[in-house]
Image 1 (cartoon, rainbow, N blue to C red):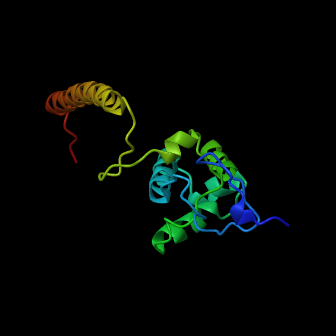
Image 2: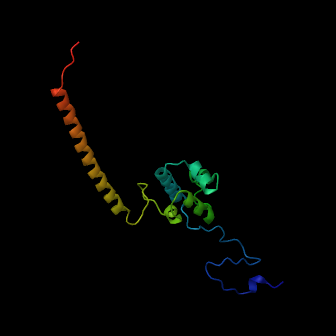
Image 3: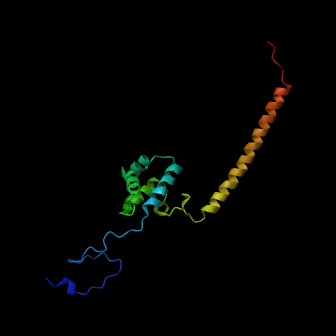
Length: 158
């Protein structure tokens, strides 16, 4: 067998080639997944869909995936390892969102940093304000009708 150290090989930076006597110096590199952000986004989707983590895990076909992810983050091992891409895709499908939605960073308030989300939330607030005004008008009309009915109604004698 030739001396492998003497052979010059030029490989691209992201090559997956493993030479026979290569040391595992750079093994276990990050895949770019922030497990804390993924877990925060999973929790956000669970609230939106009003389902449990167990239901979502079962729907994804990976019975304990969310529970195991919670353990990993809780035990401070969020930087070690990641989720398999197919597992993340299955979770996204179960949570009715995209993989990118799950991987998107979360700011300090816990809100996912979604482009255009501010405009969406402002429009939603405006709609809710209009609905609130309508409800207030309806309640005022009901109060007025009730007050008028009591004032002009007959009294019962015992």
